[in-house]
Each structure stands twice: as C-alpha cells, then as structure tokens.
Image 1: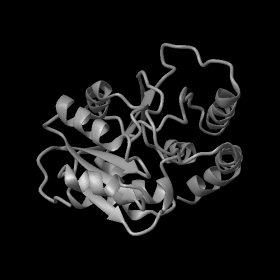
Image 2: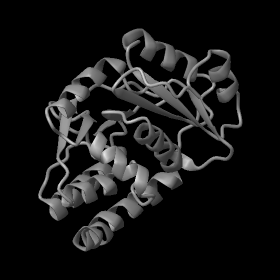
Image 3: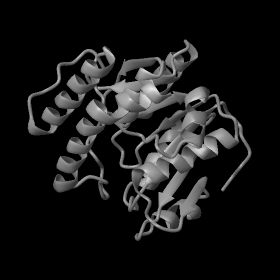
Image 4: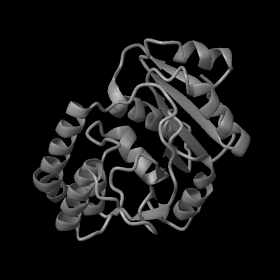
Length: 235
C-alpha cells in the first residue's frame, strides 16, 4: 500500500474476484488520469486479484476476509480521510464505469456539491424492465421521504466531498447504498447527478445474485421509508 498522496482525488476500487478485469480497468484509469490517486481494496478475493494487482505494482489494500461491498468501500473512505483527499469516487473493478466521466463528477464537487452521482438517466429515460422496477421503487421512496428526485439512486458511480468522506470514515452505519443517499439528503447534504454512460460487466463476480437483489431492494425500501427518517430526526 502506498501512502504518499499526489492528487486531491482518490479513486476507490472495491474488488472481489476480479482477476479477469482488474489489470485492464486500472491501466485504463491510469491512461486517462495519471495525475489521480487510486486504491484497490481487495475484498478477500479467492482468485488471483491480489496477485495480479501486486505484480502490476498497483496501489492495493488486501482485506483478510470478504467484508462485502460496504466493508471494502468504508476501508477506502478511511484511507481517503486519513490522507485528507478533497474528494473520493467509488469506481467499479468490473469495467462498467467509464473513466472519461470522472472529470465531470469532479467539477460538480468543485462547484460545492457534497455528492455527485454518475446517473444513466439525467438525459435518458429509464427503461421498463424488472431490473429497473426496483430502481423506480427506490427512486419513489427517496422522493417521498426527502422531496428530492434522484433519477439513478442505484448507480454505484458516486463522488463524495471531503465533508462526506469524513462522515463515512467515522460512521460504520453509512454505506455506499441508496438509503445512505436518502439519509444524507435528510441531514442537509447536497446531491447532484451527472449524465454518464456505463458498459456491461467485462467478467468476474458480481456482489449481487438474483436472490440477493430481491433482498437488497426490500431492505433498501424498508430503510428509506422507515429507518432513515428516524435517524435523520435524531441527528
């Protein structure tokens, strides 16, 4: 792990069993933005993700066990807080997120926003599909509880300001999920959406299976509608 900060932006790359993608994704990032810092958080992978990352001399933190996306992301945010980054972005290791959109998200944070979401649906209509049905429900739940319309609440491409980085680093209850976006909106954080395009996963293993996806949507809706409003009032 490299601790010398060279930029005011940190790219956090959670990775679980991404041996087929990790080298391409990181080299593509370095090609587009050699001036930006990054950290791969290897989330207890059982394949050669860690071996490949170290062989390529990438900046990597190895977690001893699989903590899931939340644990990997929070590890990255603690790293960002420790090194006093101006902003940090979650960037998927599977090749879905496109590096060319990072600068636009960065400009949004520089304009004073606390969170900039890489949204697929600022200019495009959300398609009608089972996958998007859950996203529509979450979108509606956030609008009902916060009064804000977040068009792509399930997008994983989000950039956070230093203020929000510190909140994540010091609160284990904050996660890289839509219910935390709802909570942060309720407690005064500003959220912007920037139009992005995303690719299909190159290879590797997703954190979400079908059964996990159904459980995920249920948990998100319950949290947004019943838990986060109560937490926001307490704070």
